View 1 (cartoon, helix red, strand yellow):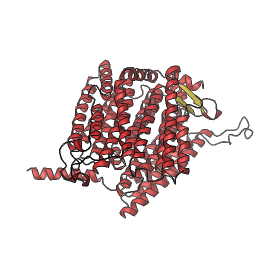
View 2: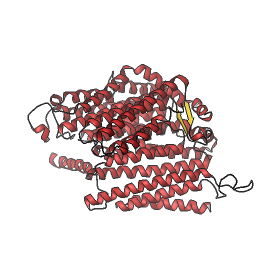
View 3: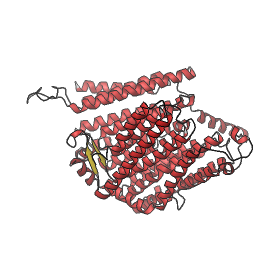
View 4: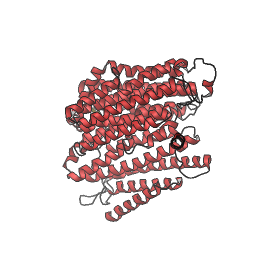
Length: 125
Length: 495
């Protein structure tokens, strides 16, 4: 079971990285969502195998008890990644509103310096 | 300590909530924000005094025993960072209050206070997962601040910033998961005793993951290019506080994780190579730019390199140099960006070919820039000189002559690019003057509060130079605590 989930984490990371490397903003957002899912799932499985809820009175001495710490951590992490993804979506929407384009733009200052260099190289000779 | 140590985190958060309630009245928001940051600063100073007298202090939150609950710890390094950061935060807040339109949006003050709380938490937390949370608190607020207003280039550059930081955060979470899988704890003091028992390969692999995570946050070569791309478009107070604090929180965490959790895991040569490349690539990038804010942004990267040298040397004097350098760098970098804010406010631009001759028209801004720039370049007797001297001395002590040579070349190039700003902005005339400069040659006016805040912060950098002796002694003691974290670990485990 752990091997299967670990493989799933790997797939999520791979797909996430692939999507982030695209130039379309929506794909970048989806890629980030996959990446954070991968990280959250990894955090969940590091607690070891599933077991009885770790509440006093719910388990006896020979039950396997689930490790509560990774679950508490992953809950926080999920909330954080949810909030961040929502913010990023809003930002992507704002960007679409302003440019009517869904791609990541080049840095205008970099383009300006590159143009200047070309001019200088052309005009100097 | 139970009240004092959480105060720099809790007070700004509480006051952030109050500023949300007071969102209709800007004067009320300003007052609340100033009082909040002031109280947090007072608590931080008290923490520094206690830590200086009695050694590292720790509190475990929520009535849990140590290791199970979240620990807050202050040793000399974190207390120093806390005080310097909050002084800077206060100065920038005064600047923002003075600047027209900088807090037009009701979200400015709440986001600013949440940012303050996140930065403070990153300095005092003793729990790896809580450190992740503090980064997210800080970053969430910074995302709001960098895109506040929603203008086209803000959104474009803000996007880069948000995406890069989210990737780094996912990686941070992965690293924490792997550490938990290997040791079964996320308490940093507990980890310090348990990580050492891991197999060498695993120990080094985990250490390198954290180097990458904090390297992105600190903008270390080769993962720095997001910074000069995203910082210059934000408003002056926002970029000033980012420049002063956010990357330094990254450096703080890099130093903390490599000294407390993974001492000796990463070969010191790697850090020295990274430091050298960060210094040189950053400063060469600065020389190529044609805008004051962009030059200064590349300098943030370059100066990070100097801080990493101490980590590479991994001696008490090397780390003392790093601590001193961060303490000096936070106010200097921020005041340079505040001056760029003054220039932008009075002349209407920071592009070198559109601004010129400000020495006559805005002599105060010119004088402030001169002081801060000389300090950044490390000219004696300013604070940057003391910082660089202590790092160079430590380098001689460790026999690492190459990195010393590289750092001196970097300083020279820094001076060159500061001269470029001076020539472009304060001397001569503009090629294509802005509207403010095209008119008759009268004195340009900036709001008094903006100038006062900048003067105050430059005075802090001068004070660091004047009291360099005592501050270096503090840094030295802080570095001793980093090299031998026994007292830190004992304070946490017994709290």
